[in-house]
Length: 136
Image 1 (cartoon, rainbow, N blue to C red):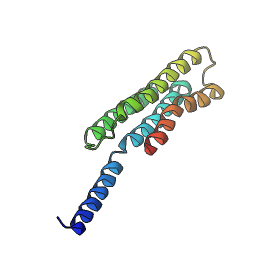
Image 2 (image 1 turned 180 degrees about the vertical axis):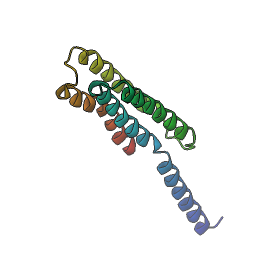
Image 3 (image 1 turned 180 degrees about the horizontal axis):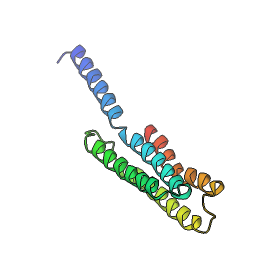
Image 4 (image 1 turned 90 degrees about the vertical axis):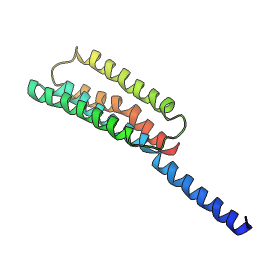
């Protein structure tokens, strides 16, 4: 192999690696979408009083989770350690969701002063995780 061919092969390998790494950043998108969805779900639990709308919100949550799972299965590129890095953000958001629900039971109906900040706090770990995963 000539030196020029070797340089070209190395340049092609670097471009392929960069493309693959860019395609492997799907986890940040999934974290951001589900984090925002969890925040909206928290808002709906606390502020929506209609049973029909509440059912529709939980159905939409199920569709969102199913759609992101389907989308994730179609991603063929994965960064090493993605599951280990993202699982702690999922766990933190679900733990904060449980705390928000448990504390929200004692609140007056539709107390936006509690549920809006609670929704932000619930969504925050996943949104932070999305930013950090984008930089991984």
